[in-house]
Structures are given as structure tokens and as C-alpha cells.
Image (tube, rainbow, N blue to C red; front, side, top):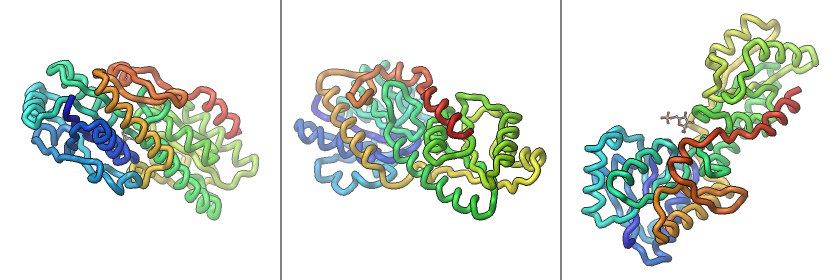
Length: 324
Ligand code: F6P
């Protein structure tokens, strides 16, 4: 291998810049050339590459977003799109690829590898933490801290006005952010897709809280919760079925994807970048780097995407006890 390309793809996540920096510096350390691909697979199809050396990634370890930019690319889902992308990679003399993203990004990488035998290694970059083969994905820790900080602030105003707040957090189909931020912020209830609480139990529990003397409450709701109601419908339901609650809704949204990465995410990004490049040098392909019990690991990309839910059952129990 002489030239590695690196790109960020799918929803951005804090720590992506730190991961690109690590990939670039590891290439420089091993005297390999490195190019960045702008806008994920879109940029690969368009040949939008920039040479990156160790100095070109200075001052970015603490920056949110991704300086390479990111996109969700429809054209790469087609064989024609991938053929054009491969032609661009060959033209640019690139012989291996590091992709930083989530399951959609890894699915694209798997197709690309299968069709052209092109060496690829994935770095899991998503706030959702919905990838198997790593205890944490890049950006998840920062998003959690952002969510906890926001919920703390909402609690201040909820308390002043004796209000009930439904706070919706991101996470796509999984409840990692909701469960952890909910426990961390001391929420009264946490609704996650992995546990169907049911609307009646929620109402009963809120009733009990009221009777036990609570004047304000925070209910953290994962966006993928299966209770079958949006946060706004939950508000309407409680308005119609519970006396004495002044209810508000706050959807945290994309603020959870921004901001300077935490130290944890910066360190994780640095470790993952080194492992990704050195795995390619060792001739490995079609793996995702991760950390399990603080040890760097490689998991086949296919398994990383299709793995079982890694929601922490013990933490669910803790949350039930804490919300008593
Ligand atoms: O995967 C990251 C994520 O932020 C999810 O939590 C959320 O469901 C989705 O992306 C939002 O996507 P978009 O940025 O396209 O609105």
C-alpha cells in the first residue's frame, strides 16, 4: 500500500476531525501518502480529493463537525456509481480506504470491497452508538454530555414553573443516548425502543410522582421509542389524561451532533485512526476498528452492522430503580 484515502460519511459526529487527523498522521509516520475525500461517497464519485500531510491537520483535534464534510450519497447505492468512484480512486493512485461513519457508510464500503477487491477499514463514527464490535462509537460520549447539559438546563426552568417536560433525544432506532443521558440527568422517566413501557404505565407513574410530592418532572424520550406516539402526541395525551400537569416539549435535535469533542472522543479517535491505518498496512480489509474493554479490536464490517443490540440491561434496571 502506498496511498490511503480517508473520508467521513453519513451523519457527522464529534471526533471525526480528530479521527481524520489520526489517519493522516499515522500515514505520515509510516511514510504513506494520504488524501482526504470531500463529502463522503459523493466526493469519491466526483474525484474531489485533497492531499493531506501531517501539518494540514493541525488545530482540528478540538473541532466539532468534519472539515472534510459529510453526505448521505444515493449514487453510491448503484453499481454504476460505485464503478465511477472506483475509476476515480484508480486515477488518483489510491490503493486503500478508511471510512469514518455508521452502518450506511459501512454497507457502501462492503459493496465497494466485494466488487473491486478494494482494501477498506471502517472507523465507527456516529452519536447513536448503534454499531456492534465497539463499546462506544466516536461522538457518542460528546453527544451524551451535550444531552445531559441540555437536560440539566431544562430541569432548571421545569423546576421554576412546576412543569413536566418531554425531552426528545436522538439515537435513531436505539436508546443509548436516552438511557445514559436520562440516568445521568436524573430523569423521572426514560422511554427507549428496547423497552416498551406503554402509555398507561407512563401516566400511572407520573400520577404517582405527583402524589409523592414531585412538582416538576423530566421524561427523556428516545426518538426511536416504540410507544407509538411522538413527543407532541405524548404531551397531548398527558394534557387530556392527567390533572394538574403543565406540560412542555423540547426536541434537542442536531445540537447533539455538534460541539467540541470530549477528551474521551479525542483519545478514542486517535487510537482508532492508528489502528485503521496499521491494519491496512498489515493487509487486513473489511474490518471495523473498535474498543472492547479498552482494548483495540477488529470486527468484520458485516458483523458490525448486523450485530445484536448492545443496550445495557443492568443500566435499564438501574434506571428503573432511580426513577422510583
Ligand atoms: O445517525 C445520527 C443521527 O443524528 C440520528 O440520531 C438521527 O436519527 C439522524 O442522524 C438524523 O439525520 P439527519 O441529519 O439526516 O436529519
